Length: 513
Image (tube, rainbow, N blue to C red):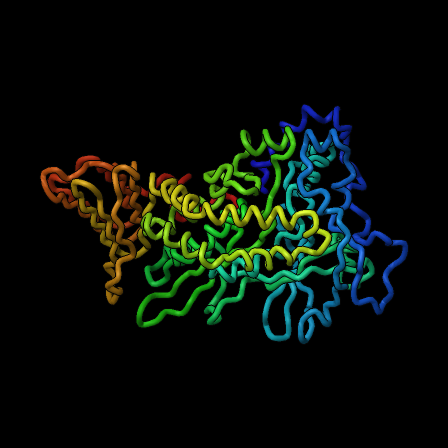
């Protein structure tokens, strides 16, 4: 969660500060040790701990607090679970070597390298959002409130994802739950103090793919690669599957920083593909709206903080964090392709598979959440085509179609019932397969924005018949290069500018992650 999103939440909880008794930041907010019987360190030979909690501090509130703020997943955070003790020397064949300390706005992570060259990361199950708060409020009750909001997440939800993602055809990590000894020498630096005596996940840094990719890059580099040349293209059907899985699981936090991209090797049949690799499944099975304040936040102020349940309560908000990717990568897919992807996913996600996946929760967590989660996933599966259709219509209203730094031809064909856009590369030796070919319907699309970006691009408008439609409207931004616009008598409803698209909405500018 990024700071701009947190402002709304902190403002709303301010009115309840006196009632909830949170005047200043609580110095001992987090549990001192995950083990319930942590009177002494576990024996040096211990392979596991049997009664550990992810964060029992979230369950210390009474009924009035839970009614106002929300019960969330508090009982699950406090449920005793078993976990193996993390030993870096034996957690992976050949051992794991500690590297760089990192983490997002909430979690702390430690990069690890293995003898076989694979990259791993161990990250805390519990989070501390204090880094996402302005310095001005770090000593106030607002920090307590933001920390307490971590109880909206299910600490073990990431364990449910791998078998479901595998069945849906989406790359996935396979996190393993461990207990980190408080006296483990690898975690004695001050930057890793949050690990000591706590539960943590160990997983491969990037979801493995078959065959192995030529490289794995972040979203910024992926868009730079797609901008530079038509020889590297995003894989839209792969992203669509991944995004429908996000929606089904209720994983609303899918901004560009939550993805890596596998760069495949080019073949005779096609260019190199940029295949999406989802990561950080912290918001799966999220629950916020089961208290008065939580309901207000999730339904009025921060509607993208969507609560998981049997219904898709706010599908547009649920999918909105990934809009930057969706608007630019999925714009070549039709409504029928969205529906077909949803129906194929329905067929793959059987009741047996769902039950088996949810049983990956620790037994105490399954006893609290398992049956309800299974029923919700089954109900949401039945509504997947409806989710996909709404997802499509939201993106179809204002599609953005970009070229590359090379020369492209944009052909706009106006018919009585549709507008067909085709984008082809003009580079020498370019493949004959167009970068995009798509029909847009006036009932679905209000505005098509074409961005040449760079290169000497050619924009051609062709009117087919006297009754050719002038809608949707079309905005063309040529960008860098000597562009040519050929409209003839078919320029109605089309505006051409040699300038680049406005900087705040530029194709190659990622939003703050």
